[in-house]
Length: 312
Length: 115
Length: 104
Image (cartoon, rainbow over all chains, first blue to last red; front, side, top):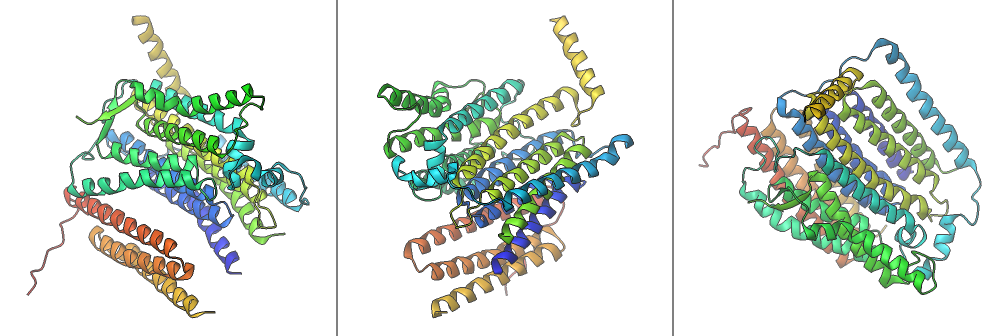
């Protein structure tokens, strides 16, 4: 009963924040509403028995996306006025609400029917639970990501790399440290915060990686937390955009894809299936490489820069 | 049927619908990106709600897919925001409309001929 | 319901009360400084009470230690962000800093 009440309040909050995101006149307010929306989504994942998603949403959805949106809003502000929506032409305006309602109705109908269906034995998820012992981790989500649907995870790394390549190709006239306003003014407290929070973000990333085998956590959550530390260093002017990608950064960016593919091919050489990792040690090795690549790609993507260097 | 599943199903549908409405009614690129992210959030919620096992053993496959989806969403958003900043730099506008795009293309072509 | 459960519930409830007070302050107070005052103080105490309540409820030293770290990190983040917001408000000239009354 209490659970149901919590779910209802959470659901109302999520819908209200989504509505504010699209309705508020000020773009800054829309961005802030969206960040809080991400936080409530994180609570919803926890309620839906998906703690791995709750961690990822809090670190990525609310944390990194939020910082990225705020920084972009700030850069668009450079000429001094908040972007405001212009009126839509009347002939397309009257269609928006009916279209949105129709889409929502469609989802309700499809979802309702899907919820009525009896549970079928032998789905991919069932098989994953049954055969979890064979791959050496007890967190089923980590098991699915690296054991049963490894192709998805490998391709995801490729998408992350492609997104960064796109962002750096587009941001051609990037000015190093180009954040308008007094962001880089040195404040003593910020140094104290960084000297504690950055080491802790490394510690938490390693903890999440190690815990990911048996409890909520894993390479994605850990990578996001590590990336958040890097983003903080970038935002406070400890790191700045560099014109070139250093050799070390190149290695870091492809480390995840390289280690994952090599392990997958090596398994084939010994007669196994491609990407069928041979045991828990292989999963941890691949996850470590993934974590480093995810963190570095996210920070470089955040900076939309070819590389990073210490602020001179 | 699990009543919480119904609540989250309705939430997923509402969030998707609101996102679609936002995408259609705004021409501000930033707002459109927020709206697309809302639509994605609605779909993620739908996947997890439908994959919630009744016996307290949730299906890990949709969870893994949504986890992948969250990371893809942030990378796509970051790329789109980089495009937005570039567009803003080139055209001085934060909106997309056919005239502005045509002008920007004409300028780019003229620049290319000058070189 | 054991004694530990009663204590944990009381701690959680009083923690929530502080959060409500802080939020009311955020919504009702007139300027940046008053809002920050309400928010940071009440919420830090609220977070402390909730963490303590959860630690009592879990009955495990390891979890209590983790919750202590959560509270300390929350304090750190609240302190720095409160300072940065107040500093920005003063610098941008929106607001005179509140007058410090000498202690007698």
